[in-house]
Every structure is written in C-alpha cells, then in structure tokens.
Length: 420
Image (cartoon, rainbow, N blue to C red):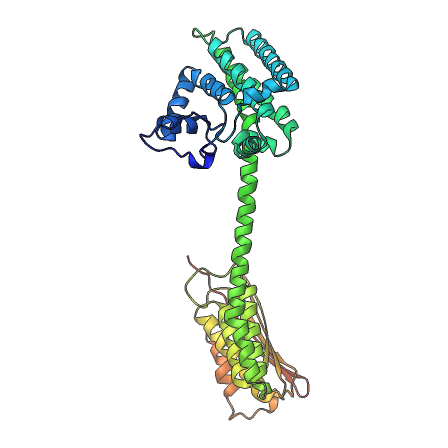
C-alpha cells in the first residue's frame, strides 16, 4: 500500500487511485490530487478550475463534491463517510444548509432580482464549508486553520475568534451581495441613477467591512516591522561605535596607566567623541563649509591634547563659518591657549552662541588672573592675536581679569546673512 509521502505528481504518468493530495494542498488538495491522477501540472488544474468557477460556478460545485466524496491521501474514508457515521454531524450539516437557504432567499426578496446559478453556488460553498469542518480529520482541520489565518479577510477576523468572523465577515458578505443585486437593476437613463448610487454605496461599505481588518493588520505589522528594523540598526550602529572607538580607547588607557596626564587626555578625547556622536545637532548647516560648532570642537581637542587641561565647551546654535567667524575662532583659540599656559588651573570654560545678528564667544578661567593696566606695552600678544583679529571684521573684544579671580575674554562679531 502506498503512503501519501510517495505520491508526487509526475508529468505524463497517471497514478491511481484518485486521492486528495496532502503535500500539494492549498485548500482541500483536490487540484493536487487531480494533477497526480492524470499526470499533469497542479497549476494547470487550478487555472482550469478557477476559470470554470468564475464563468459558470460549476467549478465550485465540482470542487465541493470531490472534496466531500474523495478520501485524502493516506486516509481510508472520505469526509462524507465520516459525516454519515455521526448523526450529530449530519444534523448540523442539514441545519446549516437550511439556514443558508433562508438567508439567500431573504436577500433575493430584498433585491428582487437574483441569479439562480450564483445562489446555488453560494449554497453549495457554505454547506461544503460546514461539512468539511465537521467531518475533517484533526490534521486536515489544522491545515484549514492555517489557511484561514493566512487569508486576507478571514484571517484578520479569525485571529480574534470565530465570533469576530460572524460579526464582521458575514455582514460584509451580505452588504456586498445586496450591493451587487441593486446594481444589477440599473436600466434606462434616469431610472438607473438611484440604483447606481445606492448599490455602489452598499457595495463599497461591504468591501470596507471585509477589507478594513486586513488592511489595519497589515499597516500595524508594517509599522512594527519598521520600528524593529530601526531599533536593530541603532543597536548595530551603537555596537560598531563602541567596538571601534570606546574599546580601543580603553586599551590605550590600559597601556598608559603610568602616565596620568595621558590617561586624562585619552578619556577626554573619547568623551568628546561620544558627545559628538550621541548629541550631534540636527539643525547643522547643510553646506560643505566648516561650521562654527565644528571649529570650536577642534579648538577644544587641540588645546586639551597640547596642554593637558580640560576644556569645558558649550555651544548654542550653529552657522557656516565665514571670514569673520574664522577670525573669532582664532582669537578664542589664542585666549584658551593663554589660559592653559598662564592661569595655573586645569579647566578652562569656552562658551559659544550664535544669534540672529551676532556670534559671540567667551573664554573663562578661574586662575591667577592679571592686571590689564600693568601689562608691559612691549608685550603685544593680546593686542595682535586677539583684539585686532576680531576688530578688523567689525567685532568687539572685552577682556576682564582680576588677580586671584581669573580671566574672562568676551568676543563677538556681526553675523553675515547666509545666502542659499
């Protein structure tokens, strides 16, 4: 005796007896079984059955009868035989067929016009569905549950239970049938306007009732998939950055454990890199030119690296760096270098701010300070490297220093209007 695992469709080789297929079954395995029996491709059989079903409705009737009367490959009895052995199943089948006939009769009276072939096909399909569900084996019923769960309309409703199917799918089908029947009454020029609007509206409502759950489920699944993909990409970017930057810096710190200044420099460099990566401004200039924030971060890194001090940087706003801003940054760099050299502290504060009309930069330390009036006239470092650089571009310079309290250098320059 052959088993279901041995029966595979082979072109030009008919195989007996005729059984419904297990392995090549989309719904009931009838088309797959016919392909195996006659030695043809299953796809060809399905195309023929679909065409006959759409044109005449006979394909649905034939498929239903073969589904009920033909045993499944590997089984000894058909679904009809299982039903005849159980009186309760037979009564259920008869009752469901009667209810279906009553519903279709009411629809026919409401629309006042119906096609007998369509009514007969719907009755056969509904009765077959109930019969198959009552008489199918556990394995085949599990297969049907998977098919229903994957279907666009029934799957979205059955995911919440069969009560959802009854409350959502059945009214949608009724509305679609009524809409089609009303549309079939269109006749004449003026007399067809009302049935067209009414029937079209009912049909659209029915399609919306049927398709809305499926559409909403797809939208929700796509949104969840998109969020999961974004989270996965963010985790991958974070892991790559930690591996490429943080872990390497920790290795360098371990090697320089005997040099406290080098450890501080490496830690500050990594902290600055992490801040730039985590808190990168979203409103940064789109131009290829260097920005105000970028230049200040370079200033911070250079001073920390060259003079082994900590530069606390705060920047508000950003803009493209033109000539006046480049002069402002150069003057601020000189002020930060002077503070690193002569203030005697290990921390210098730098604050930059971009306003609508001006760009300001402040460099402050809490070190030894100095008396600005007592500076030797021959020492022109502050005048040439700070004041003249800014004032040549129409900017202002204000230096406040007091012995024992530190120094603050205030720089500002007009902001030129950026052209696209």
